[in-house]
Structures are given as C-alpha cells and as structure tokens.
Length: 412
Picture (cartoon, rainbow, N blue to C red):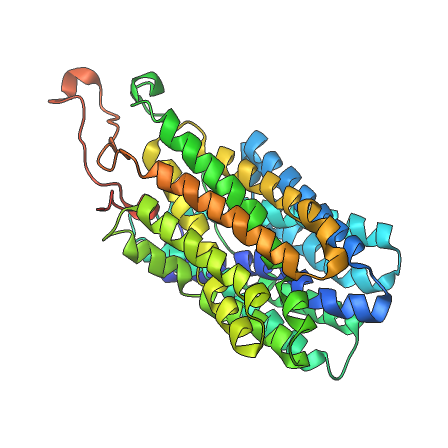
C-alpha cells in the first residue's frame, strides 16, 4: 500500500488541475478577446456568442458530473479532459471560422467543467477535517493561472499575434496538466446507516434565497470576467487591460483562503453580502470613473471576491444540509453564466461600459438576496450523523460546528 501524500501535495495537484481547467481553459479568453477583435475582425456580438458557447459547454459538463457520479471518481476522466482541453486551445488558431471557434469553446467548456468537478470533489473528499484554508489555497490556483496567462499576454501582445496567444495558452495548460497528472480523485464512500434526510431541519427558504443570490452572481460576475480587459482597454493605455487581468489573478490567489478564515469569525451570509457589494463596486468602477487608477482598483476588488463568493455560497449550501445543494447551486450559477453575455449583447454596440453597469446592478440584486438569507439564518443547526446502530447511541443528535470545507457556523 502506498503512503498517503501530505495535504499540501494534494493541494498543489488540485491547484494545478483547477488552474488548467478554470484559470486558463475558461478565463484566458478574456485577455485574448481584444486581440481577436483587432486582428481577426471578430465583432463584439460574436465575441459574446463565443463566451456563451463556452458557458453552455460548462453547464453540460457540470450536469454530466452530477448525473454520472462515476465520472467524478475517475482519474482517466481527469487526464482525458485535461488533454482534450489542451487540444481545443491549440486548435483555435487553425481556423478563422466563427462557427468552428464556437464548437471549440463549447468543447473546452465541457471538459473544463469535468476537470473542475473531479478536482473539487477530490478536495472535499481528501481534505475533509483539515483546516479550511487548505482547499482555499487550492482554489486560489485559479487566480495564479489567471495572473500567469495575463502576464503571458502582456508580453506577447507587443511581439506576437492572437495565434501565438492561443498556442502559448495551450502550452501553459500542458504544463499544468503534468503538475496535476497524479491527483487522486474522490473514492466511493462506504455505505453507512444514517438518519433519513426526512428528519433534517427544513431550510427551504434560506436555500431559496441562496440559490437566487448565487444564480444572479453567475450573471453579473461573468460579464466582468469576460469583458473587463476589453472594457478597460477602450479608455486606457494599451498595457492597462492585460495588466488589470494580472491584478485580478494576483488578488484571487489568497482570496478563497482569506474568506474561509473570515468565516471562522463572522457568519457566511454576512460575508457573502459584503463580498457581493464589494464586487458590484469593482465592476461598476471602470464605467463610472474611468482611467488607469480606477481600472486597477476594479481589478483588485473583482479578483478578491469572485472565487471567495463561490466558496462562501457552496459552503453555506453544505451548512444548510439541503439535498444536492452543491449540484443545484452549480447549475444555477452555470445558467447565470449563459444568460450574462446574452443579456448584455445588445448593449455592446455602444462599448462595454453599459454592460458593466448592468452587471453591477445584477450583482447588487444578488447582494439583496444575500441580505434576505441573513434573516433568521440557522447558524447552529449542523447535525453530525451517526453511523452506529440506534441501540448503541446515548443520544440521537450531536450538534457541533462543521469541520473542513464547510467551516464553523460563524457569528453575526
């Protein structure tokens, strides 16, 4: 039997997988989009369509992971998805067909979602019981790869064209694939005798508010995540667009670990509300103020919240013990990402500023739903289920703070 690797080794491998699947596979399109506008004649509307194709593919991949749980536990699925993702990035420069680009971005979305569900499930499984900041640093790998890809594009924009940008992104994904090659997926859970979910406290109204908030966040955040570089580039010196994307990545690296740490001191609903308001301000800033300073501050605020919001929302769903909470939240978020570019597409004929303002308003609506979530939130309701037979128990319930990724109940 092999000796289990250290938690930090697992964190590093999961971070590499998430960096490839999310940071490069999905978000590298953001800094490359301005190059495609100027060098291939890609219109703003067509750019939004390509983004939507990627998000539709992501929804398909996420649903596949939900409906076929064996995919989540398969190392072959992880490795095959990483290789397929690298291939789709490398193939982008081989054609000038918008339809072909759409198919490639659709496929990239499917496999990046599979990479995400395998890596995230692996974190939930193998780091259960470890401090919450450990999986936070793994999720921060997405931010690290955003920063790396942004730096790459910052260098390439003056010496190469859009084709080189895609090929360099494919090479970065290949390197990250090597780093995550030996990641251990989740293993099947042993069958245990547990209390039926029918006895769980009813948390429908809180989960409903959470689902609305997180779905609206999917709409608002993805507009900034797709068009921020192009929007900043319209009114700032050439380096500021890609430079702001590097800042987004750098701010995102410690963000999940930081929000997880704050969750031990304050309630997650309050932190979720705070993070959403801060993000809305960051998204609106380039449209309201303009200039280099506003662009860079916007990048820090956006990068410091978008991964943290995901962690807070998902762990709140786990805390509420609502059936299939992670699956439902992921689906709502994915649908939001599909709707976001479609909703702002009519506004892109006048530039990106109106789209950013609409996105900020949607994120504020998500914050309003998070404010509703705070009303009477059951902070101390987490129940630890027993696997011993009833006759061997001294009590039926043991209420205590959740551990690991679900964090403690927090305080107001």
